[in-house]
Length: 190
Length: 375
Image 1 (tube, rainbow over the protein chains, first blue to last red):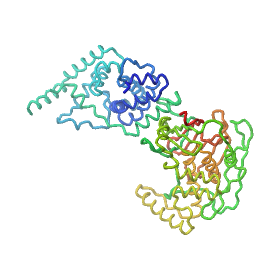
Image 2: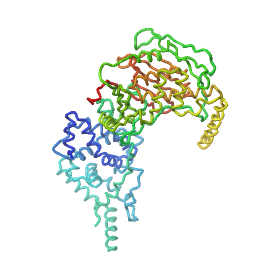
Image 3: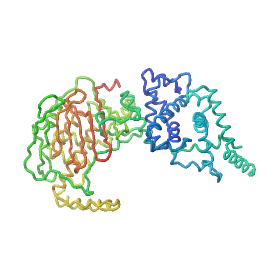
Image 4: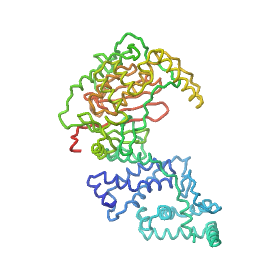
């Protein structure tokens, strides 16, 4: 199977179907990324815009990277920023932590504690670039190096930002208490 | 051992996108690839750019486009419609100045008023009708290059590109569709001729028959192909079906909290509904069979029988076109639909549907002669 980079290379030589194949490979991942950041309805509108932006900027793809997914997250983040800026003033970004509304993720949570309520303030206190790296690693399962690619920053910078974010979260009052409860509960079940 | 990354991961859940959203996104991309720069990110598509329509597709999970064509049903419509039994069949022609063509021309020709022809009422196309004139002209038109028409249609609802469909119309009468040229090649390889298995085949075939039949027979054939419940019935039988439909519609209206009253049966009401349906089915057949000369001929003849349809010369992107407008009377006073066709070939250029209160829907059509073996 051709790598994403090879397909993008072919698309630059006129084989537009090659780019479509790349986007088909990653549509669920990018769609989920958009939904997590903007909610499903907005994500459904934005996905086509992300594809068009990817098509128009494919020349900028660094073909030394075989996997295009981090690059597509970067394109998607740019579209999200346009989207957030275009929202009317009376309809501000509802959640500074970037959590989409309209979806209950709590089925996986076995604790009675309100994890969301604890984490949201802590996330909000992080620097925006710390949150971006954190989300790409924790939610999109990227390596720190790939998160750096998506955000257009050196890998060392991304590593530092992730370290700062994790430290800040771990030591945030509510989060540290939550972690202690979780781990104590696990110990009790052993 | 749970750490902070585990906690953050617990918040990653998101409501999954619906399958049609992925299809729509691909359509937006296809449109951008086909015409770089025409799909505006975060922007609106102007009504001048695009049109509305449908093209059937069947393979690879493709489904026909959601349609905005409005059919007058039994659910409480108050229409205008031209009267059944009007004996005169005179064309009404107005003379206006067309700025696009730069001269005084017989610009607006209204379809003749309806005449009563048994249970299927129809207007007789007159020799002066621009639609009939064009239908006769394209009959003799032969293409010197290639062996098929390739038509790309881009459907937009409001500002959303819903889908881009490619259709290949071979000179031998076959129709293949797909979401790309590769999709068409797939359809050819798998013998998926829409004329033999497509959902719109009955309408397309009816349009072909209308190319050579009388106006009344053409209308009857089209309505029968679409399964119209009133066509071919005696007035007494029509009334029975009409009343039953009205009663069923009232149940739905009440469920939805509506107040529309049942419409009494009359020949006029039937005519009004018939005109609406002939428009809807004929234009569906046209968007499905646009590349077939006989389909275009038949549809033009069918449209010429509908009062409430006007025709005017126009210019689109420097090309001579005809603008065919189905006015509000065709849609029960609620909106309109405008087709623009090539004045020489009769092929669709654009189709715009206007409905009060909702964004316009458009489809643009781009046609070119191709050689199937070279696709």
